[in-house]
Length: 123
Figure 1: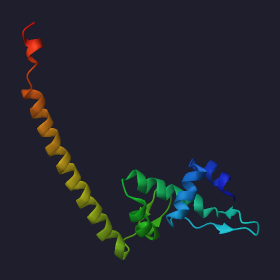
Figure 2: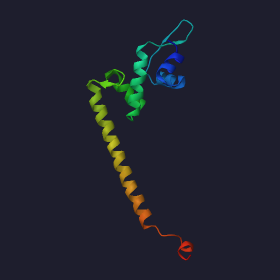
Figure 3: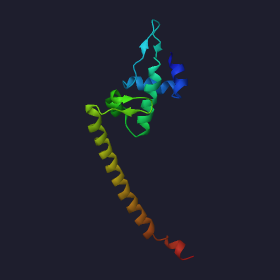
Figure 4: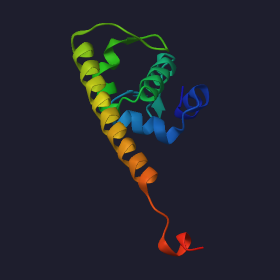
């Protein structure tokens, strides 16, 4: 199938499909005329990519763990790189959550202790 049909079947733009190709996430064959030719299995692969992106993973990380993915949801098989990669991503996410929690606490404190400008207090 050509890129337009894959885009229609997956709901992903042709531009994004080309980006996935640039990132090494999908690898279409080329026709004699140079057109991208996708296999039926590429619809599942694109759904896997979308699902992993929705989990907050980068395309770099997805490229590492995609060989461990089966099915459109996907189900991840515990291949060697998978567990270490996902543990690292989870640790990074936890650190970002901690940073955001500290920032939120500080902003809440500033808001709670803020005083109205002098010209508004006099009114």
